[in-house]
Length: 323
Image 1 (cartoon, rainbow, N blue to C red):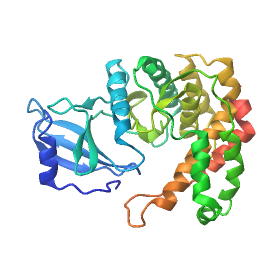
Image 2 (cartoon, rainbow, N blue to C red; image 1 turned 90 degrees about the horizontal axis):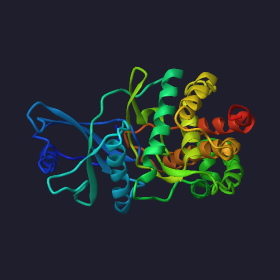
Image 3 (cartoon, helix red, strand yellow; image 1 turned 90 degrees about the vertical axis):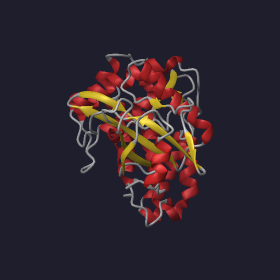
């Protein structure tokens, strides 16, 4: 499971006592995720009727300076009735606390399950909620630079090096040239807002076709809406087993998005190239994780070649599907 730091029962109980959520009943490590340690926490609840929360300890890729943005964005979107969990503030009003030299936050638990194989109706629903989130986040009073932009992805791949990439798959070093082309793409004229930037199915909770939760905003940043849409498209519209593109899901996601917010022509024109860059972002992060994750970590490495295949699809068919 994705728990890199052990917290004992007594330490967890002392931590939970700083919040008005009742007494700790149980805490179970959550398997998903590769960057942070997460626990599902059950307490007696503020009114004694029981409650659940998510406790996150930030291990990688997140700095203390970014947390007011991440956690504030959750509260901002939740207040605007987006399906986003609010931050549970402690008794002093703080949104996060320190445990030794690690930062932890307690987050509202939302019902629902992440879809293993989304239907077109579910893809449409996430398109709708992504557009709603983009509009709702426009007046958030903080901003954050995208640290996983196309130039950053290139830097990650170059740091992995041709030898490191080849140790994962012999064809992987060839992706360096497309990554350089993506890094040169000019998106400065496209509409911007605060975006999720990592809206994979495992970061979405659903009950049937209803989106009940969009979670894990720890790559959120201020960037182009088209980038967020392209990232979500790459994450939702391919079969994880076969790698095949699902045209019904792809069309449904785009239709759902545009039912709330119409794409500008400048966005539509660049979407094929943006989608290629979005696919490369996950090639880079997966390659880095593959090389950096300790051998004994209880985490399943994700294959970057899965997103190389998606880059190839967008290179071949992107102009057609985003027309």
